[in-house]
Length: 374
Length: 178
Image (cartoon, rainbow over all chains, first blue to last red; front, side, top):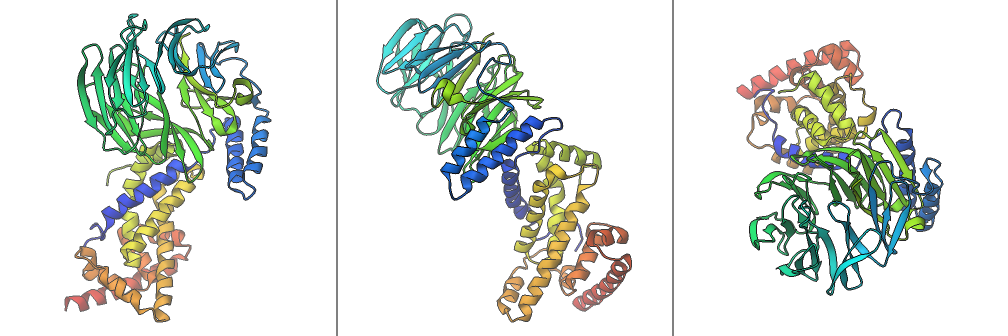
């Protein structure tokens, strides 16, 4: 025997233990950075919310602490301005809001699930049983009537020849950017937003069997399909340069190249909720929800090496959405449970601006849907 | 084992900033010796796994307070070895009150492996305190002075335990060889 010999079960125990240690690491709230006293204050409030949520009086205590969050002196009482150039699109139960850099905003009443066209000239959104392309001031360009509409997305072709993909019931359909040639693309797809590869008319989607498919919509040709062995698909998102596709399921992340080959694959503790690629990079912000801890986290992940994740913020309750500013210097985080949005400057969290009273200012279920185009 | 002290500092800094791959590097660098040390003190795979894993969980919990100028290994090994000694003492007490089933479980936990052979078997015959100092000295390669600091013992006690433990170990190995 040598002291260097492995002990019985050493390797297997190591693999089991690494999973446990990784989960504990995922669930921790990192300490605040030096000089980042605002982040510390918010994390402390997050911990208070968590404690309140877990206490016997339950919701009543939780509600009073939410009020305390609103009264946090470092949080602005309303969104007075955006910290970076561009316009923010917000979906809420009242409709779609377009917020300008100076904080002025317009409500497009009755619209839901709005998203930007590539240069922010138009929005596509659902109004009742109609899919509509509208200008940011509300002027309607075209509409299509269909039942059970969901998740419309503009392509990002870039030469004024765009397409819109959307779900109608279990089907995926495509219509040209001028409202013509509405057609069926796939008969049975998962309830996940389709993702256009930038610079092309290729759209990726999850089918009902859990496969990811990429289809050239003009040639009506499937370019590739890949099975991820996943029970529950959650999201698809292309990097801005169109060379990386992020596919997330309830428990795993995949990065796929334009030929359908896996670049990286990694398990995640906690359920992925939303993701957004930083402009001109292969890094994306990922929101995750930890059910047992009733806590959420946002981290920046390297698409080419999915294990390389840097936690930038965590808090009690749910986070709803995340979006980068057009320059990639700011991140907006929808902290749903705290009724706040946080503007976080860069992954290094050098600056954090909190805005409260989101529901009062934008209506229930208000969530950022895109920060577009200076 | 790869990984200089510089690497380790970088891993700790990265883990403190939330980078999972750095924590994984730290874990994979230290796991074999942490588990092996626990195993050689407790002679029970499941207990060794629990002890080593709990030490790493304690490291995660204390990550933000950890001074990365200090080496990580001694901090981790202190937790591992002290918990392993506590576990062994508790098992000895249980045996004294007649829980024979534990002996059966322990006996069944001996797969074919160098550690199940003469030296490891001989080590199992020593007291937990003697096992601990021998493991710290010869597996983890700490000096007697460092062991004294890790276990909170006078250096003389460490030296005498080492001497007595190694003598007993030699006798046991000799008997096994015969």
